[in-house]
Length: 244
Image (cartoon, rainbow, N blue to C red; front, side):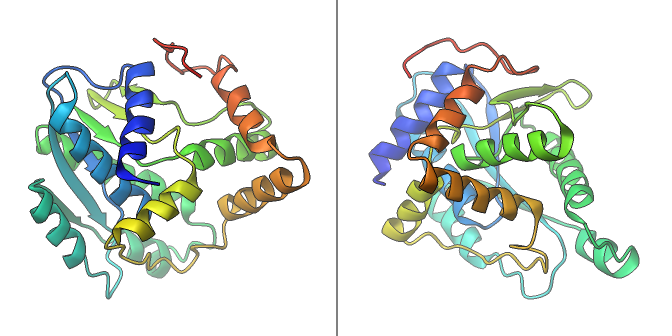
């Protein structure tokens, strides 16, 4: 995927779900992985020509794992002239040493988002951008169906009233395969996830299930995504454009 294609997909999401307003200060949540670095590139590029002017910052919640070196990300943010903040935490130690969690993902996500949102507010941002892509949205829907018995997925835009903060997901129309291609084409400085359960989760199961379904039934992935977009899911905003 070329940079111009990334801009096109990202702008489609922003326009259709009215994600950005004039004067917004958006923090990009950076994990160090390919998805969040791709989102940083996307919003940095859009900032130059998008009709609604907005500020951009970047932030990483460091879970406290050893050898998690964010220097490459710091260098990229410096190169892009994007302010970057690292929030140091002991979440990793709490989960694996103190609590000895065997299924830590849900609690980790809750603690990480709490630390992230507080830091984002301290930075003076009114919005935070998460790098969930199309595959994430489909996988979340399947996980919800299988394990919760409901048809649900991430919303493109969510207002957190207790934090007075809006979460946006500008990469919702981007396929993971295109993110991988973008990472390789532009040599993104990916920092490897140090979590010991990475790749051994229910989400990994859902990822493999989507791949299998799409292999056995060509186009199944796109049909599932269309069902989500048209599913009147509780909490999802109205689409302002219908270009799909």
